[in-house]
Length: 435
Image (cartoon, rainbow, N blue to C red):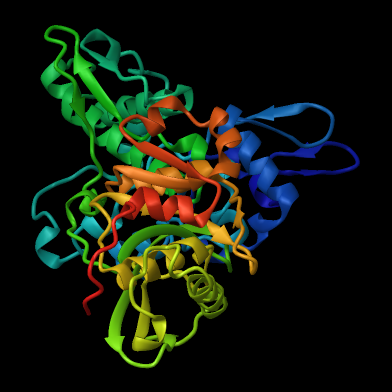
């Protein structure tokens, strides 16, 4: 840190590297343990936001850009399913949303080809020192307003996004059109790259349970025809399977949490009904408190089976329960109510409608408990194609702080008792209880 941002001495403040160089690159970000110090991290955030930092009484202004390089050891889709693309950073840094939100763009290294001999040119090229001098001269110019001549960004692009996109477009224009002459056909592909790079940052922030970053639908439109164009990130697949998946009795989608890191996750509960003598057990090894939640849910089913519309005595059947865990939560939790609904669904032989997502926990006495961070639950459900979401009635007050756009198109049902939820998702009709 002293080398980077300078240090105070009895006589004067010695400048750091950010005051002497145009670009500071950090190779292999996994080794940035010193940045994990809260004070050092705050200096980074101040500088990355305003270009100034404090060393002593007076603030110091510098102009060096920062580049962070790292190796993503996981497969990209595995990282997106189980974590986020900033996971190579040390834990404190990689989960500091305020720090990561200051990144202008995330370049997908997995799209870059490995360096090969055939890529080297055989003709003359610029001497590196000369080319560096050209780039240094170009720093005095700015093309940040080039976008405004032909394009308009949509409302999902907030102030920090706008700043990042403009700076990236300006830099790319300097590289490809150093003479400063360009038209809309030149700016548009660079705008696409800039918006994709910034959206990739926002997608990861959203993945870290940051509800404030929920709206990542970046788009722009030309001034002349007004046809809006969304800018996707190629690695992000729209998991809309909830609305199209046909469920059989005993199966449902739900949203719970990974107790270990409080990550909101999507799960699928599957209950198989077999001839037996009334046992109910997990088909897979007990992970976290799922076994306890299943025991509580099954006890409530046994106590109220006739009122729940179950026709046959439970002693005729064995129930095998499996928790599908596509987001690979270490300790699945908050699954009590979904397990209860899935058990009744299997015993009654009635399936839930497509696109229904169940959320909620129950106590040992069978009372419905509230869940926190409801916005994150709705966000996960919506992104995976939910049409209806069921929530504990205790969560209704929290909905006042949820952005209206987030719940548009979602039908939300609040329940105070598990039996109310059964009536809502399965109806009051009792089907033949066939295996």
